[in-house]
Length: 208
Image 1 (tube, rainbow, N blue to C red):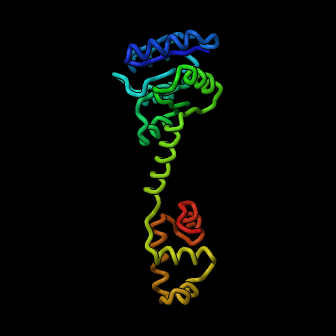
Image 2: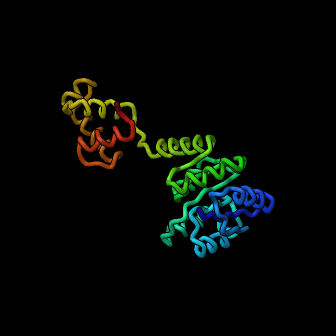
């Protein structure tokens, strides 16, 4: 399996290169100390897996991933980083990384991750997985339309199949007020009818 390594810290890179060279199933075909050289090496050598430091001079791992995808290259990428901020992890995974490990991971764990990624298995250290879940949940919460308590009540009763008149009776409102709430709900949810409003509300977890 052909592998390249890119990291701008010489001592860390040399240690990783040494570990990879001692693995009989891995063939180191290149190394780089910055992102641009890493991309050029990937384009020239077409390795199976590229092991990239997240933050490198010139181009960072996200830039290299974007170029790999742009050029239609089949090289899979394992990102190593001392940073596990949730937004950063999300950005790297969304860019197409096959794995994301902390730079504190041991040499065997990194080599095993290279093999797994080459087989198509996604790999992440526990802290990275936790950060990714956190970011996904945060983004979903931000995307969720904010509704008033009354709008939620109207929406819930609509989902139960109640008519505007029945909802008005249940909530002790006028039918026109209920219809006004429904109109505002359609606008908030970006839909034009009841069925779509209910479906969108369920998708966002706004009603049971």
